[in-house]
Image 1 (cartoon, rainbow, N blue to C red):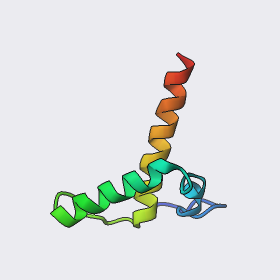
Image 2: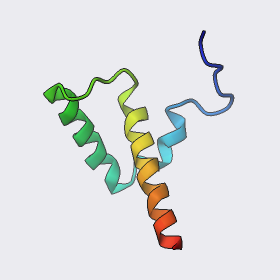
Image 3: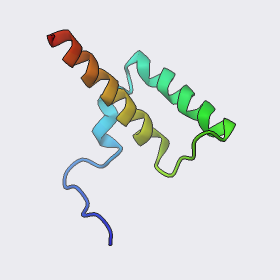
Length: 67
């Protein structure tokens, strides 16, 4: 059974706003290194993985700033 697809933005577009952040390149290189070393297998598009991690970090920083 497949999951229903979200309406609106594609998975890729969900994280477009993070691409210009300095952290994007750091996370992207780190994921690439893990894949190249055989420590991680990418079964999802690279930009989606990087975007998801960047969003998680930005959200965590926002939470810390509030406390």
